Length: 214
Image (cartoon, rainbow, N blue to C red; front, top):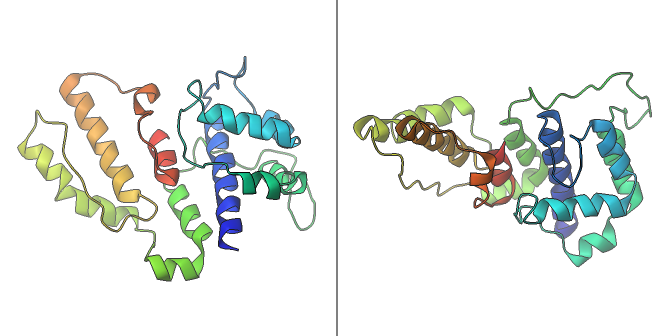
């Protein structure tokens, strides 16, 4: 059952990631245009097209990452009915009643990326939370700790933009994500240069990688 849950979590994670890309107008090179939510729903109507998109995102032309790996068991278990649930969900359909929304009710371009940490906590379930100690850390607490660690380091080393960071109790990766944002900001200040998405392709770890890209 845990394996089934992991597959479901990965599948939902991929769809959330793609939806973030769509709403933030990121063009996927596989397509000649920026995808719309309607395009994504059309893709989800076909298992073949859905997994073609997933494979593209893993490829060198996509994001070159193994964030949500696809194994043989997933290919066997996931069926069009599962994908249709996701299709209806992102289309704004009330799952229980089947009532469709006249408008697109989600806009991931304005939903804070910290939302993903909350999603992660919901995905793993209460039992695994207790066993692994994976609890969401509020952003204000993260900011407070980083203020007296990473921020203090850069304050004392204004021309430095590299530092080693350890999160020994990493769950959803919120500490690492917020630290990374500070590293990027410091790099840009020191070098007067903006970091592009292509320069982030070396980072790779599930939901944390997802948040880093976005």
